[in-house]
Amino acid sequence: MPILGIFLGYRKAQDERHPTSPSPTPRNSHDIGHALPRSPAAGFRGDAVRPARRKVAGALALGAIGSAAVAAKTPEATRRRYAALGAPAGPYAHGVRHGDLLFLSGLTAYGTPAQKGDIAAQADATLARIAAVAAEEGCDLGSLVKVTIFVTDLTRIDALRERLQAHYGNAPPASSLIRVAGLFHPDLAIEIEAILALA
Image (cartoon, rainbow, N blue to C red; front, top):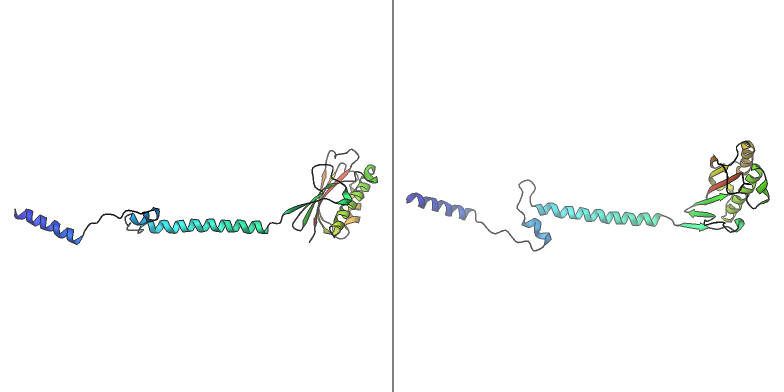
């Protein structure tokens, strides 16, 4: 029996050198990481879980702050109606101001003495209406930054350009010229949309 005694003595010595204890029972979800065994390369898993949670929470907080900052910097759009243009004929505003820019709906010579006139006369009447709007806003046609011009006929384009130049002077805006099959009334040869800078 000496061999058995030697073996039992060896096991007792090993138990004394390396005592075993039960793994701690996690009290809540935050203790789960500390209840997991240590990885030789990464340490406790809980050490990696907690910083990851903090990073996610920080990213969400920064996103919320960024969204609030964008909302605070975005000016509201305001709808405009101008006495010089009369009541709108449909569900639209004469213009919409956003920040320092005023976006005007398309204007024509409809309802003016120039309605049955040629494209040059209609251009004069339409630009006079835009000038009236600019005056109500405390500026003039020099504040035009962009116009979009719709015409039904390009055969008198030179006459149109002469009238545009006369109104723009030395401050012509950016411009687009588009030929269309027709406008909302058969008398009309031209319609102009405009953007003005009001700063």
